[in-house]
Image 1 (cartoon, chains in turn blue, red):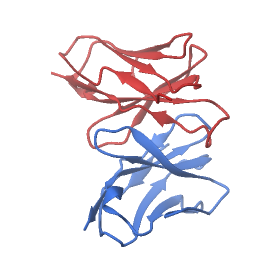
Image 2 (cartoon, one colour):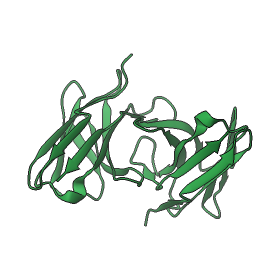
Image 3 (cartoon, chains in turn brown, orange):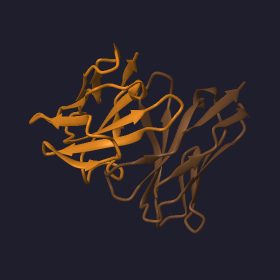
Length: 111
Length: 115
C-alpha cells in the first residue's frame, strides 16, 4: 500500500542545521517532494528529487534519498526563525499525478 | 499573476447539509486537484480534473463529487455532511509537462466546520 511517515516535531536553535526525515512504502514512487506550510497558508513546494537520484542541493536545502531503505531526508542549513513551519514529505508515482503526503513535521526554530 | 484562489475561506455547516467549494486555477493551468487536510494531518488526495473530466480519484466516498468548467475552474461538492468532513480543503493546479515535475500550486484552502 501507499504510506508516508514522518516524525511529528523537531526543535532547533537558530543557526543550527535541521534534518527532517521521511519514510515511504510505495516502491513505484518516481517523484519525491518536500512542501512547506506556514500558518494560514497553502502548501509551497520547496524542492523535489527523482527516484533515480540520491542527492540534490538547492541553496540551504539538501535532499538525500536512500531508495533501498525508502528513506528521504531534508536538511536545512543555517536554520532561521522564518523556517518555522510544518514540512510535508510527499511521493508520486507519476508526474502531475496524485501526491501521497506524510502527516507533517512541525519545525520550531528558537532564537 | 493571480495564484490559485479558493472560496469561501471559511464556512460552517450542520450535519446532513451539502456544501460547494470553488477554485480558480493559476493562470495558464488546466488541471485541478482537490485535497482534504484534517487537523494535524497531511493532505489526502480526493480527485483530479483535466479537460472537464475526473482523471484520478482517491479513496473518498461518492458523497464527494466535483466538476471542472471550460475556463478550468472547479467545484468540489460534498453531500450529506458528516462531522468527520470538517477539514481544510485545498485546491491545487498544474499543467502536465510544465514546471518542476508537474509542480502543484496550492491555494490557501477553504476551512469547513461541520457541527
